[in-house]
Image 1: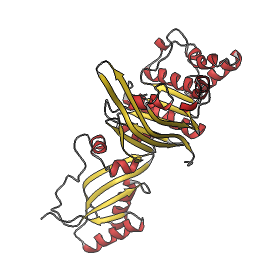
Image 2 (image 1 turned 120 degrees about the vertical axis):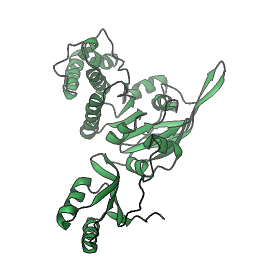
Image 3 (image 1 turned 30 degrees about the vertical axis):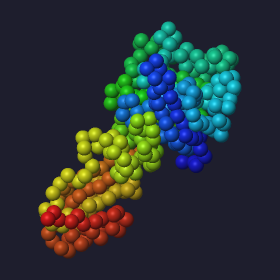
Image 4 (image 1 turned 180 degrees about the horizontal axis):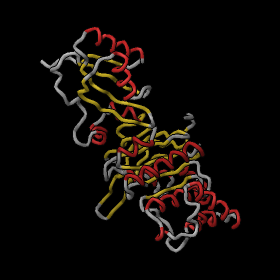
Length: 339
């Protein structure tokens, strides 16, 4: 990933004035989203996620602070300049927001029509984008004739119509089943890889962050309480809000009694895969191990987490296994016995 900052947010706050008094939805938000990131923003319901994403393109004007997009302070722009800049920021929503009386091709063409693009060029661009998202054979279909996943693919094509630098996804997969969600996330990842579009994912689902994002910010009570690489947040959450999201059932500590002897924790940091290492060790050292605990995840195609194993009683076999693991530059540490 490049280190050029695409979105810089500093001390952002948003207060809504209601008949019952002021409601502070966001306060003190500071974030840097780099060019080429797939950046996740996650929090429970009411954490302020949707307000924050709408502040990123000034659909909601912040009460305080600044949003700098690709080097430009959005709040300093005239209305006309802001409309022009927003063409570089695509948006995808939970409920698709398609025009029901327009075909898939006409929905994708719509933002180009608003920008007064030549009709022929707009039609060609819409066809190209629908082919890109796997709907080249559904140009003439209306939203009512499409599945939820197909509607979201049309919405993605529409978001790409004006060649945006950033796509903001506000709970874009929340209305979809798990298989369709995976296909949409794979499509977004491919768009990020091939087109270089920076993607910001707003979600309450940790699985979505795990599958697609490289960096994440935890939002709680309208404030960012933790931010960092996805793998760091998953395996070393520093705040209670992060722990609630990563371990919704209260998990987090190694839930086994280390009363057995020769227990070792093997830590995977993204440089090795789980199964070939354990299987290879057993085959190479010609001795079995007992897996007592595993907390592992495949994040962005890499292995992260820990496995606790009980080594064989044979001291030489145990020593061979430890040498095998350390030769692969894995962290291996003995787990102290209880009592």
